[in-house]
Length: 184
Image (cartoon, rainbow, N blue to C red; front, top):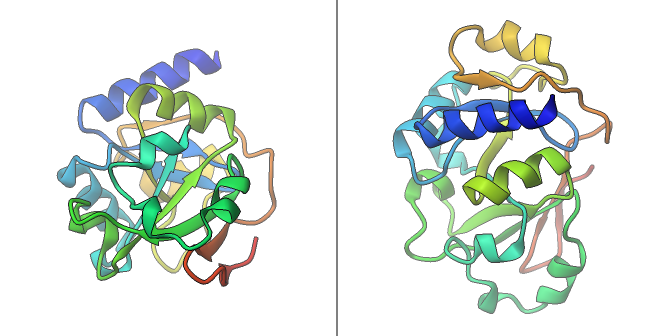
């Protein structure tokens, strides 16, 4: 059953659509990051400013090479040692990284996930956008039903899975300083 839902989510993304999918702790909204129209739809649904920047999740660190410049890190070992896992890192973005992903920053938030659904999606699509499935100011959705409540008819596919791994959203850290910006 899970494979069927993964295939449907992949198809929706490939068609330029947006999906809701379970992440390590909450449901996320996602799409293929180079589809600007899809990213703009997500920002509009969330009522989120493009200036804030977004997160990409991947199945493998190599999938992030076209977006971030790992060579600019002083201590890449701490980043690579935390992956795959629930730590999102702010890493210097490449000049070619789309502005709709980095917002007003020169970094991009990225994570190599250990979650099997995310890995299955990214193994077929490459890295995908990941932002919590909720309008700005509302609690992140932790269930399929909450996603439907927030976005009924506005998302191309909602994966009907459960969040089983973590109570809190993933930790966010600055890869240049090691400073924790959001605790898990």
